[in-house]
Length: 373
Image (cartoon, rainbow, N blue to C red):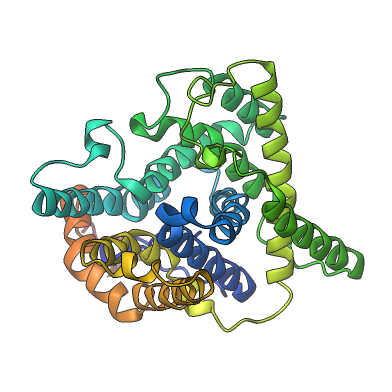
């Protein structure tokens, strides 16, 4: 997933020509962010219907791991003033801005702070921005290690035993999804450019098998594993079996996720404009769902027969994704939230006037000196 494009303040520091965007990557991001919206929309109702539950499990088996992987693909392992400023403007600024917005909304609706505030955790979907901030800070260190991904997995396994990780500051999810982020950085943006028939068939077989497998899972399957926010103690598997289960989840999520992404990269889906603004969908779709929940629309949807409810959910998720990724949404978000906060958080360095050479003629020779600004 992309981060916010550099705002007006940050963009003044560079004169580099923009790179040509990879449309297949943008298409993939569009599908992934739609799945985030769809998954959140049906989430609280999955316990009431087997079909919804199975589809939700299939989606959650890969969509957040692949979001982390895609973020890693676009991250840089260098650390300098320019990258630091960009990290503030594209990750920290929206995290702070939307944390304020969502907590204020919660207070207006319920008269108190959210449960996330009580847990000292980012509000709902905003955990991803805090984790992304941590991952990018850690990348220069882990990129210089020979077995960085393996070390990240080991840290994740160890952290899963802590009862204090959980939702607190999003620590658990930061550790759990960090290996995917590192793997994405190692794979790079061209990983899906190689197109082979055998890979296509293998990917299709994996996705079909995973989809069918989600429907065959027992009703008591503990899908809390997919959240990445529960310790092994809370899952009642704080033992070697729990760690082996976690390793199995890493393997299956990676294989399923990469297979899905490979299939999506095969054709132009016409969703590039949504994909390049996927971050706006991430931060705004929660507000749309809050409105739908508070007005009773979601409850009304899931009172219908499951096929109708599923169809409405898909269409509504598409509408929310489109609206949040609209260029007007981007413009208004920058103007009223991101740019003002960037101005507050990032030191404003006045542009230096261009140095003009002054030619001084002498009898002996002409000397060129530079006038100090």
